[in-house]
Figure 1 (cartoon, rainbow, N blue to C red):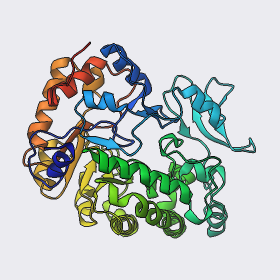
Figure 2: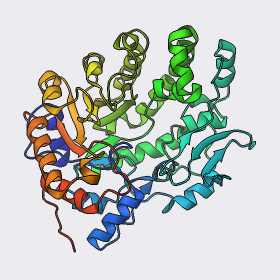
Figure 3: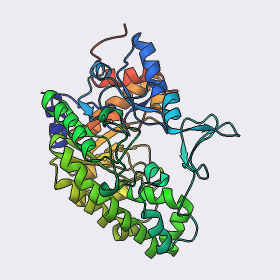
Figure 4: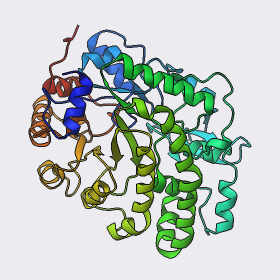
Length: 427
């Protein structure tokens, strides 16, 4: 089987010749630059053609030679060498500054609003400015959304195709900053050419890794999490007004333009990410989801499906079990990252109850087993997940989420070598 055949066979709920393997096909199943450096040390060679796409957490899309070493069957649409080799140059371009407390920050152009902050000794940035915190009114919402060129919109990925800024230089799809979700017409054409080339000249399963709507999470970022929850209960009308405005004026127009360009050439669509659960249970009630947000998720998926036959992936961390039936109802094919350590998410249960309707992408624990487990524990984890989730197809093997700094290279190699022996051993 080709890699593409292998992945699609599994996603059609049939057993392929071996378990399909993923790493780095999209933004939530890859690894950090420090982890990548440790693997380069382990193998005694460099893999220089990576794309450092994420400045907030330092995540990369790996070099193709690296992926071949691990028998990876997927490819990200941004496979290839990116613009920045180190975070320092990325920070310099974005105007990241040192804060008095030793952390790092990104400010608005006028220098008045702190938008992102990386606390001292932390690995990643966090949203800091919440422009719609406090009393939420339709007037404030309209004012916030009227200019998609403001800093808040850029950093939250809120963009309307008819109002994007002209790219300052010819657009290179491999060198896009971060998880950028805005492209002018020329940019979309360039991106489409890249994805078309991958589709026609490789036999990998091509995965969209960019422009992923977060309709709930984005509103939590602009309102602040505490105020978002208060609005959900006490000011539902205005909370929904903001969410629907975001979906209908920004997400849906962009979704149509984006997937018109790349839809024919992708096999898997990393379609929506909304973390609607904690590790202990739903973050809000299933009834609230069905009433307020499920119809909006359905609209986005409907728009995507107008332009592609790709399988639809939905990213939902944590204890997602109570939402799985609803997601299957609206056309979701794949759940990622499959956090089996969360409440109610044990592999046997989700496979038994939803294995005929949903495929599972991920599931290898990156929170305890991979960073802290013994080699044998890693082997046992891999074998059990393949045995349970891979039965009758419907499983793509990958880390449960991004592999963080401090994870031993030996455990990562053991993980992939157990699933499918590496093409090369340690040099």
